[in-house]
Image (cartoon, rainbow, N blue to C red):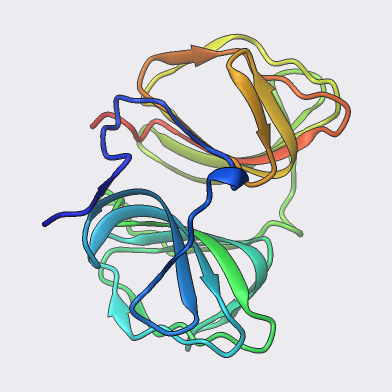
Length: 222
């Protein structure tokens, strides 16, 4: 039977850290917090994955591509070591064997969600990449990737910043990396994940602690 978790993409989903439920993966020392999923071990999936020190994951091929952001520790494979803040895109057909060192690692990862023509290999150290001014005072934007209508970026919100009310053409997905993110619907502390469907609308803002978010738009038509 196919595993279905938050699989109705026309619905808004909010998961805060208090909602986390870590489950064991098939490999010892590797746990997952499944945010959305359609499929079993090979699945269209969005997850937080936590690797214990010196844990490993079996060699695998990304039949639908892999996108990940290192949230903590150092994620390593036979190709490279990726420190906290590193953003990686492994295109369709790529493969690797994760092997984690003494620091352990936690990553935010999306699987089986690439367009066939999106073949660019991406490795970005977000600590060294330049920020660009946002659309309103108090915002800085770091573009990470764009393909057709899909756009991925980090957005740094200064304290007490208010953004314009806007509609999400193709939906919006947010992971709060630092601080606290708000809109008229609620409060989202560090670690919160939000998925808002096509044509949803909100007016986000921050308070005294500001926020840093990963944001992806234009990918939720299904």
